[in-house]
Length: 77
Image (cartoon, rainbow, N blue to C red; front, side, top):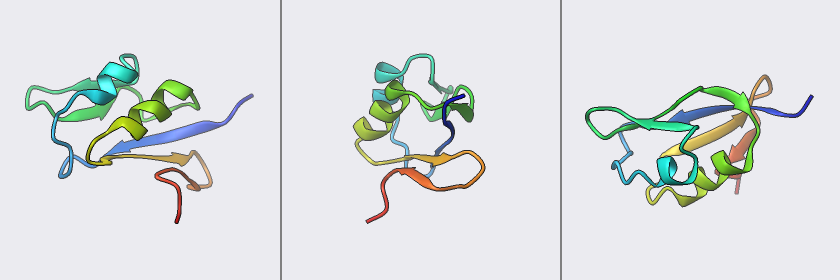
């Protein structure tokens, strides 16, 4: 079995650019206020979710390893 991730969106930072939905349409949804949220916060590691996080213009998306909490994105400095 592959890695599993926990995905969070900091809604106080999200500006509703919808880049996450563009890159990972199955991974993110915009609510009526155009705020992003993960379709499933606990998901299998996948390139589209990572691309979505990397494409967010305000870095509102955080990905950690499910279980350990080790950061996937943004990477630790």
